[in-house]
Image 1 (cartoon, rainbow, N blue to C red):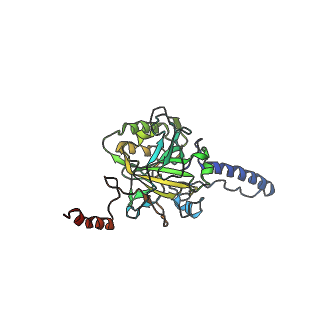
Image 2 (image 1 turned 120 degrees about the vertical axis):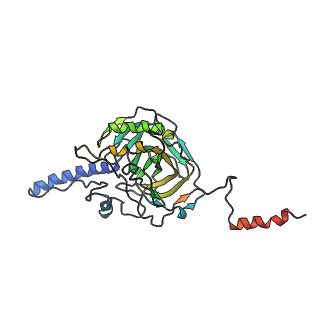
Length: 337
């Protein structure tokens, strides 16, 4: 997950631009004093694959918080998940609105869809306040044959993962404020699994048609089709999810994210999943296709993953051992003449 603001720039880009300006000033000043000195490198870029800037470098440098203990993504071991009665149903505002998606962009490390300002929000679900959605983006491997979800469940990696990025509504779209709050952002994560047929669901076929127009880094086009988030998430039971506290999954890896991962996957046909590696990392003629755009799982570091309290079809918590024994003890009283 990368945190983007409404203009489409990452926090990384904003900070890098400030650093570039500062270093440029210092370089000019130093050049006047030491005409033979080498100028400083103004940026150390991050990447997914090159040994000079991949995720092992993020940790060793370190880049921001990338080497700390509340990092994402993680592997969810379902046997260790704890029930939490506070994880109630969400309220999804604007998810049925089919005019919220404004622009789709190839950022050079993902495909991102911007959402109209203040049109989509989420509350409930154990969140402390309302969160406003900024955008969603995707992570993938290399088609269905090489899965690329960021999170895994019992070490299973899904073909893709979709992240809806939200920040506290009180921040009015300010991502800089969100990175100063340990729960400033809330990410809604959806696994994408291979489904049946071809070109299905139809709404995903509509969305993926735009990929042909954003093949290179920096390409972006307006979304003219009417697509709602509800359409994209059809088939997912959004009352069943996992919850844990984590981070952004790209530098600076800020530890500010309340993660929600929904248990039901979105089912998308193989041919549509296989379209995502058709976009490229940059504009050079020899640029490789954009594959394996995900961070590997990191240590959970004694954090707890939570889920809803299990209920029976009657709406009550299943019997524990003591409850079952108490019920059995009642039988003699029920049948006493």
